[in-house]
Amino acid sequence: MTIGADPAGHEAGRIGFFFVLYDEGCPICRTAHRWLESRAQLVPLVFVPAGSAEARTRFPGLDHTATLRDLTVISDRGDIYADDGAWLACLWALADYRGMAERLGTPSLLPTARRFIKAASAVRRQTRGDDYGDVCDDSCR
Image (cartoon, rainbow, N blue to C red; front, side):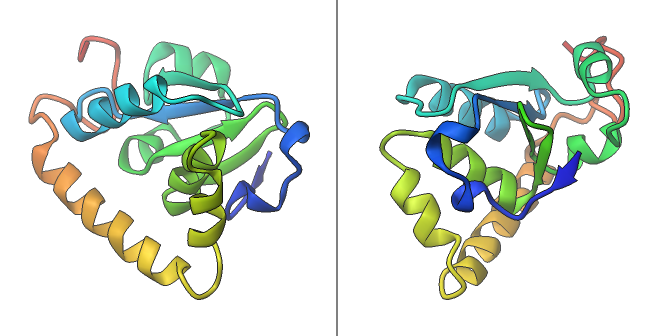
């Protein structure tokens, strides 16, 4: 697997789908999951709770503690996008947001996008359920 900054450089037909590992214990992540799922997708998004038994089975070599801290997206080709790259990958997968993702991934706008994502991550840490540790054994459901 390789770690990518963002998928904007890939041709539309080359990525078949994305696995999106999201923090099921976070209200912001659950809302983002519902929003992403409700949009028209050029690249299908398959949602998997981060740290879950399913995630550990599908991706045994992945740092699952890190996937609970930062949104992680994995393409069907094995490319891994984390943090801001993962958010841009999700937008890039959507029919109405691909152009925005490509613009946000440019050198002139990427620093602003990163600041916004960092701020959202800070809020996420504050709203995340107290009973949801860094490792999920599926009892968190």
